[in-house]
Image (cartoon, rainbow, N blue to C red; front, top):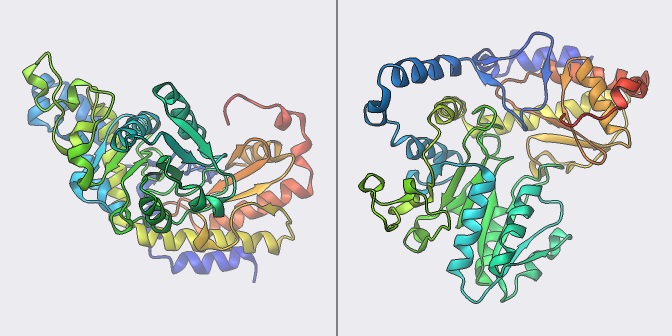
Length: 407
């Protein structure tokens, strides 16, 4: 049976197939980059039009109260919470992932006086490492351990914080949140998890693992749109001791008292800084609601099936590529990454055919599987296109080899 015939059978039996119609996808496009920017939910434009035309246009400043703008960050955060195994009062939707990393790294250091080391790994997402570097002026010392099986051994008495990404952005390899969190706590350190490539795609149980802090992105699997607000998690047990360095007015206990002196808001609200981006939160809320309706466990099950079927389809076309993602589906995120010296040109050749994946320097072709809107037919077709690109040496065309600034 051909991959196309098998795909038709799988799609006919897929309980999530109906959700594809809830997203806007251009004709002739197979979108394998939802792990960079999620597709547009069809209900997002109407939701944003309501905020713009009625709440802003008619309600004007009254909408901070009448339309719930003031509580939007906490409301959306509470909706994200069950997707990551957190309580509603432990998550806030605010700022960017980078800003939230900065805040929580600084908070962790304040909670572990006498310890100055933040432990991570080389090849972590760049902004995570950059935020560590940005705090070195405060006395922080960065330590990176390349071998994952040596991370636990590196947790000595100097480490204040272990900071890792659950699903690696380039390979999709997963860390064991529970095991590493437990090891860090046994060493007296705190843990900060970056869930940007996990939230909305993989089951995560922060409270079950005893996690301290986490951050995540709103524009990937949560489909909140480009530049969507991120989110931050702080375990309730740390709320009383939470000191964040960006003491902006929306993190104040009484922002509209306009006091000269800062007094942090109770609980997770203290992590807010400036005025929340209401338009961005409105778009994010639509995506979060839709992903929650589908259910993360169901999404993860389909994601695993999609990636396995894609690999089988490549084999049916006799395609041989070096897989840098873990071979087992339960050890990787919702993606497959392949190494090839001409990965950039191959990616561009696929895009020209309507198969949108992405390239990660220096030599990685990365294909994301967002199961909310991808079909098994997409997998069969994408595998066929990739086989054709390689067999016909399409990647050698000059227009595909000239690198653009953004891919």
